[in-house]
Image (tube, one colour):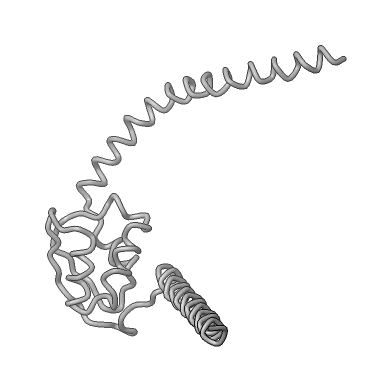
Length: 167
């Protein structure tokens, strides 16, 4: 009986050790993949160097960023549709990219492609919104400044109150 208990304990210990090694290995591999993707989001180069090849693509209004990335991957404009989707969401052009037919080149980076896909109509609407915002910002800033000062005044009063009470 003691021999079976010893064998069971040794087998259990070996199993736990193998499981721990497997978990560490999977975490290590996952971290490597995450790092690679994170690095590539900001440093991905163009598919080709030099002049590249010009490709005409049509982006419709109902296309998701992932569908755009898949289209670009099929046309040879990007290497990885998922990476393009992440780059799109992290791009400064996130709100400005719109539907249309675009002349893109394989020598362009994803950022350059998104810049080329900015729709001018949305820019003018954004400009109008900005002008409206500017006039409301003048009013809103004063209101926000007052709101921002009100919480500070009680804090200042509270701070001076205890100091005044102590001193």
